[in-house]
Length: 138
Figure (cartoon, rainbow, N blue to C red):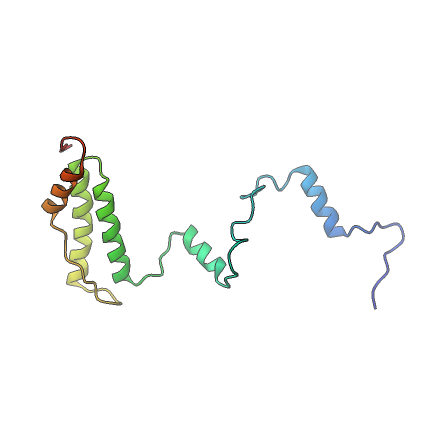
């Protein structure tokens, strides 16, 4: 059995009225994504969407430590190739080499690391060869 609308009350529900009034006051304008389409409308439904978004926002990784270090080493090589000076190249490679060395001494959980420290001089030489300008040692 359904309840009838009480006399003197419009067909607009109380919730709808609250939403309408808040919209008229502009209460929703400060929300992130206001006025923009929902980013996931064209993608298939994913039950874990909220976990993935939270991990992305918090910059968390679900990779095992060994795979995360492989990815970091790959990113370090790319960053070194785009570095602005020889000093930056050396610093980037030495930092990742330190992490690789620690992982070789105490292997992390997960799949095999399959990494060895990079030869800093080789990476610097490749950086120089790719560069358009004379080498800088700043």
